[in-house]
Image (cartoon, helix red, strand yellow):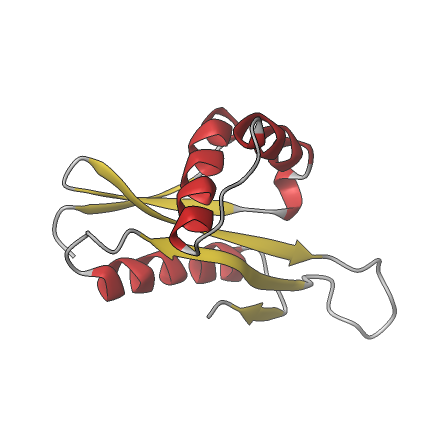
Length: 125
């Protein structure tokens, strides 16, 4: 989709990931308690390796986010070591044109990342 950028969230993006998560909660009719942004950012940073995230930018605005959980079991004979990547949260602002295309682009970025790391099971829905 023209004008849409998908980026993997880095550690420096913790507050952005938290802010987009807050928007997702509000879109579901929830109102997180005071201090949610800081608590979420701190928790996400502490588990950064196991909760990869990608964010979308469209027309110069933050448009959405996909946060995943990477389950990596301990090694075991005969079992692939790549683990499982599963969607934890997928959110795209409904005021964005091309919501479905943005969702598809976020999913594709997560799948590409997982494939490059030999993740055995990719459950990005």
